[in-house]
Amino acid sequence: MPDRLIVHRGDLAYIILNAFPYSNGHLMVVPYRHTAAMEDYSDAEMLDVMRLTRLSLTLLRVAFKPMVSTWASTWDASQARASPDHLHWHIVPRWNGDTNFMPVLATCE
Image (tube, rainbow, N blue to C red):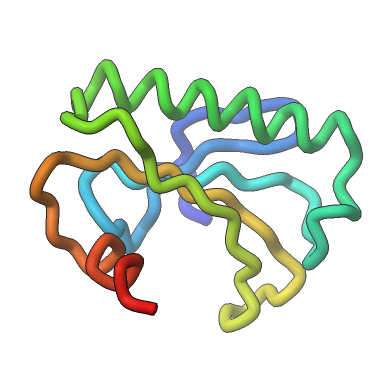
């Protein structure tokens, strides 16, 4: 991961800008330790992920001032990439009327 994309380093995880963002301000919280199962993370690792998720939400509210109060916040096991034993959390700010592919696909079942 290029250092220029790293926003903040925590003790057990870090915040990065998504290199291929779904929308402006798309951040990801990434644990340093790689595992494909969320239950493998320790309580300390999960707490750091949640602390950094909360920090990400605060930073995005200040910097981007999204219009809606809900956030697309999901965890994703990246099985298709070079590192199949890796989880990360997406934090994506949303605005009223946005039409990127995430809200469009989210309504299709």
